Length: 283
Image (tube, rainbow, N blue to C red; front, side, top):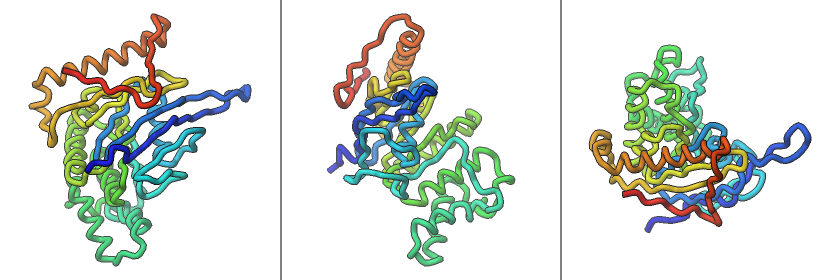
């Protein structure tokens, strides 16, 4: 039976002091639950706090108020149960691909044998398509290949939650689509609960089970959540030929347009969110 509250984000707040010492809530009352194995997209305009939410879930950014529970345990800092892939892979240039991934594996599996660790690293690199590039250095690889190393490094930790912070933002469109397929293949096999931050509506629709739409900051929160009902595994060409795809896309773009209109004072937009935002059904 699926645990409907595998990840619980409750009344999450992130506040920073302004130059006058006053507290400014960048994120203010963010509520979301995630099922085990679910892929959730978070989308919104630049500066709305998407990455702030992700780094709080990762334990890399202190929570001002509220709480985050993962698999029944409230988090109080970073941990191997939550792995992050950032826009830049941040590989150590003096280490090979294999060594970059092995570094995390050694920390998470301190009691594993050398052979067991090697198997984990080799498997992780093979599933992202780098079986023949294990001993290359970052300078010898393209940006897309380096990001594959970052993905391998994350999944090698066997995390309960995978956090993707615009992982394709620096890549060309063809490489972006290739890596989307790579990640979806991994998620379909491993059933890892995943949060992905993105600016791209098409990417969110293709990859996610639900899309969380954030209001403008400051005081950003969840405006709406939209369910994406395409079955898995997904075929890009088949999905993009459906009317439903364009209905989802129109709903996302309308939400972003409404937020933009509110930002410029062209009419107040009300997003009533007493607790968990209502799920929007399309089609």
